Image (cartoon, rainbow, N blue to C red; front, top):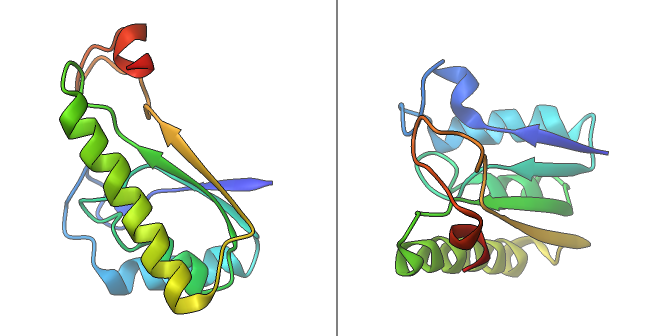
Length: 123
């Protein structure tokens, strides 16, 4: 069973909102005490430490969320590349993951930050 994780509970506001590496480390220690699988929602703005701290604390199964920028494939691809580089760096430090998924298109049903079409996600 995966647990969903976002570091913004500490500030009660959206990204980047002052989340620190130490915050994510503390959270991952708590999560790892109860779960072996985690699903995250981003790779920047406070989420850049998720893969490193999860693997460091023994969470070896991850579903890493990547945001889509509507009508901007290069920006979306940058997020995918960033996710892959963070996962690779964590694996080199702490050993490999047992299972990885990239979740492309976080919260695409939201309309407060952008309007997504099926083609945005598919592309």
